[in-house]
Length: 274
Ligand code: R5P
Image 1: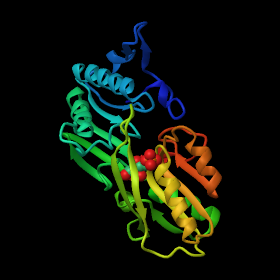
Image 2: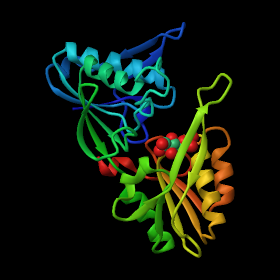
Image 3: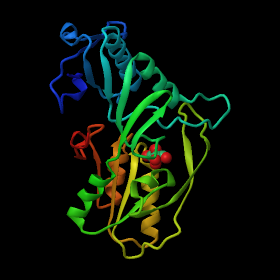
Image 4: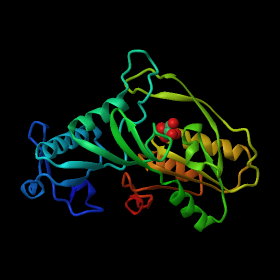
């Protein structure tokens, strides 16, 4: 049995009710609960944007299903907080781990997600006690560009995304600095370097995500100063914060992502790879 929330309506017919109470508290209801009691259920619910709300909604759904004797798998194509898997300062939480533990506690037997930042490997893993099936969209992302532009050199902007090009490409080296002053917790990119030749080459840069766009923009600038010809940028998850899509589109041939987060440049349908 599949249960889908309205934020999956681009892929599945929604059959879960989700609303907000007037004060902002979250309301969920599973109208078919009597029919699915004790059954195996897949819940399709995107956890981004508005990740805090969406995570709470997922917890309420999972726990209600668990209390009704269901065995539940959660399908959430992007896992928020997945970048907080390490402590930069001693007093910081391991947010990625806590979110996984929370989903497990609520009743998720398995989470299926795509290019999960802290896993850096496909297949099944346990993290924070939660079983996670991590699927990579690197092959379809690369195939999309090669169909359009012919054979390309594939490069990741940092070693973390290296698994996305294993045996097929190279990685730049990225180093972040200290947190910047101000309200946002953001560590600037201190260095982004490459030790290979790109002169005259057509290049596809691939990453697990484009968030503020700083990584991709720096990577494109590097490749341009190295004399690369055509440069195409892609990622599994596209947040495109602020005006980063516009900026990036202005300095390379094409930018595209999958629809794990729906965007105007989503070219790969993750549902085809579940
Ligand atoms: C980080 O290690 C990730 O793989 C991405 O490179 C990073 O999260 C992208 O963030 P931004 O677009 O803000 O540079």
